[in-house]
Length: 199
Image 1 (spheres, rainbow, N blue to C red):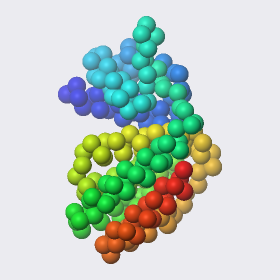
Image 2: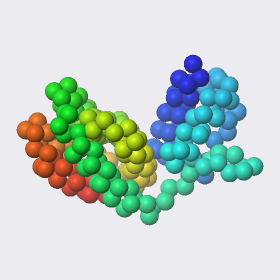
Image 3: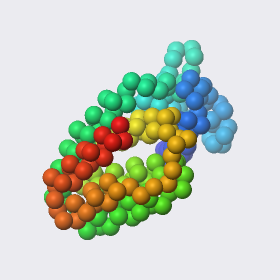
Image 4: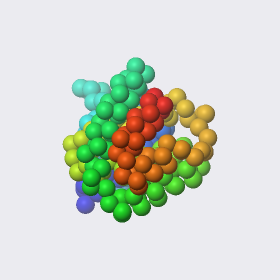
């Protein structure tokens, strides 16, 4: 039961931090959060530890837990890491991609293109990348990529929120077409270009 509550708290707080609703330096008070979610401090502590593990919060002795600062200099590193790790995952997963994976990727692609606000788009964009990379079946690699997606999302919201417009992602469509014709080299090259363009 507590794990489920901790998951809910983590998801809610991480989304607020990523979208900028909770600003860098803002205090994450256990008692306030526990009251808001009508729960004890145990799942709140668990959720805060997960936020720290994902780089979204920082705990300071006698000062409690705060939203971590966003470092503008790290975006280049995040993009370079995403290029390396996502291409590694796509390469390893290519032979295992099933018809169900392609159907799920197409659904995520369409949802991304149909998003009418940035928060929905970002969630669907992350889902698309997760679906095409999951067949690699390498949990540590996928966990590292998930963390990089969180960092990318924070930078996107911080820098592009007011310029975001609904759009069709031609790269997603091209990656999916390459996957459907089992062209690993083309899919990886389009993904590399796509991630660098985001950067």
